[in-house]
Length: 142
Image 1 (tube, rainbow, N blue to C red):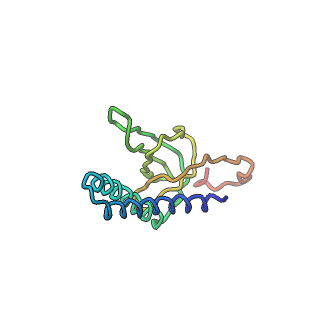
Image 2 (cartoon, rainbow, N blue to C red):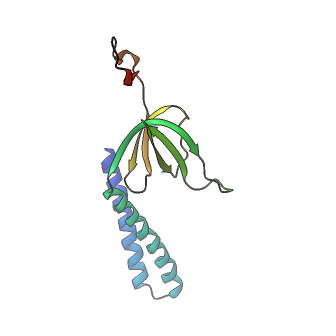
Image 3 (tube, helix red, strand yellow):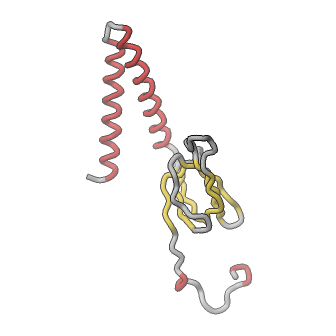
């Protein structure tokens, strides 16, 4: 199975679970069963809305050198990792919920979302020294 098909099957399973939770919330008579089903249905509904918004956002790619990687500052090390990437003369601040295996000073190609600046995936860039132009190089490119 392709990666896209697996993702669609997982989303379909989450939607089916959401529908079952809503049906359980409506049709059970006992209040002790309605409350947990309702709370779980709200949680799964929020998850589905966030997945939909993430799917609809534009994805961008950026190539640059990693300047800093800042871990979360709380005691349990839970939260967003902050990455600052230098691209040319400007820099971009990106975020990730998972621990990153990037090294400071290396160049990476990073794919991220439009508004949240969440890192989707990243790849190391291999610099090809043989492709460098030889001969007279203009001063602005030296």
